[in-house]
Image (cartoon, one colour):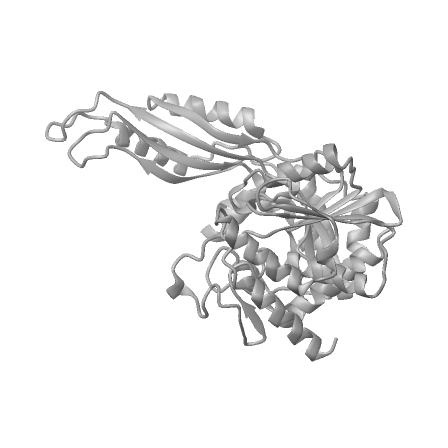
Length: 443
């Protein structure tokens, strides 16, 4: 692709990054983003649009046939920028520098909105008509697990009577072999086929309150602290290597040099042991694959410094593993919390999603399109510890996959939700090519 075309994409994408569509922003902010989008892709903007909820939208591109609809998902909202001083370039500056486009949402995931709509716009200009109906679903509240994706899935199913055969949303990704040529013989990537469950649980310790001048033993925060310390020191959740993880290591082993393949292929066998002896950061990552995780994130007690709270609480975010699940996990926590005279309140909860079939036609098609676009790339299925909007589409589609189709570095992927989020100019352009291939080859 000519450099002039890449530069054009970068400049247009930068315009989208300059609109601060933080989750929950006023409608006027999303309206501003939409104005930019329709200016970037004017022919795409002429397609029928539906608004199932708030600022989320479904765009229909009618194909020659209607029996195998394709759904392309992405979300318009972004997480807050945090302290602007931590950014090399302004988080909503849309700065193009160092062969990158910098800004909140560059990878997570306005790039997918841009890539899919620009690909469609260019194909429309070329006179292309897709073989099947294609629906573009752009949510507005993915970052706080809002209800727009639920509304989109319901609207597709109940109002438009759409039964997709393939859904593609964010999640997963790939990395080039170039920085790792000592180990890799091809690019390597992962496609998310299942998500862990999710819950926010409040743990409440009560007392008779009182003045701080004569404190009794085991006040609410002391009991909560003892409980939290117990949870920190004890591994109370089941540890198990799921079939999906075995499949992941077997597939990934094909990307490494022959001498390393037996080690990588069988790495899952030592994962439970490795999770106990590796450095803390690696251990945390392994445990996220092997078991339910739980972390305390919020707390509240008295509203006056000289009052003993009559009720204090801490909130934990829990990610259920598929093998343990919601019911079993909550029963464990209730039993442990009761020892410290602590109540639990489940604020919201959902179990792990179903597993997408890695032998399906849609999975194979996705792998083939990635290879067509990026060359020799080994793809493997994996379990997503976080959450995406895609899980809601699994109610209406068996093959709902999570894959971010842009070749970003590990450092760039790590900047999502952090400082200095950015995407390469080349990577953005290649992503447009991917979407053009994905749309034009779909049958």
